[in-house]
Image (cartoon, rainbow, N blue to C red; front, side):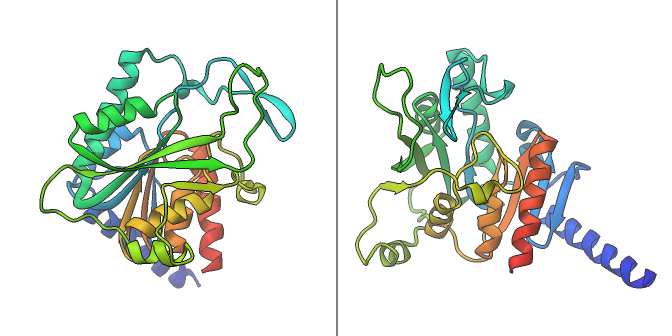
Length: 283
């Protein structure tokens, strides 16, 4: 039994080294979790991304800070709650917001393959900064996806319309003669054989997807599944520089993709680990 356990540990270590050798040019001791085709890194993205090899990932999904934590209130589960997410979501000036977005976008562009694409989600609080920063950093925006929430929280102030949408920008490198991946036929087939539009309607994240813990900006799995199926193929590598609760990772391994998630909050990576382990049990 002891020998079997040693062999298992050796195989796991070999798998970790292969993952690092393929995607990282500098060794790091910040691996939080690794299994088969999933890797979680406990580190700030601004430190981890420069360690990755150039043009090594096929898709990047990013859900960066929205900068909406302003002391206001909203409704969740029928109760009034604060809109504040965490310290990483507050206290930025306009100039600092733009500089932040340009910096992580620039770093992501370096590790993205030429035919790869970048998806970024946001609200009115940050998405216009993101769109401008994308063009400044050499990206071409392909689509402006509107995610319409079928069950948004009510507007308590009654001073504006109910906020029921978020925006997901889909972009590629602004380079000629390079074709990005878009599984057009698949998207059409899952849409009653009609061209899929850029307005996607669905509910907020289900309670069942939060059974291992909660993250303040957790996205529903169906949203990530559509994104991943639309713009990657089996075996492709997906990176999420703001891992959060690893919804991107859960959907990636479910659909036979490789996943690298980066986050600097150990609590969220522990939640991610539990979700990924649960997903592996289903395979």
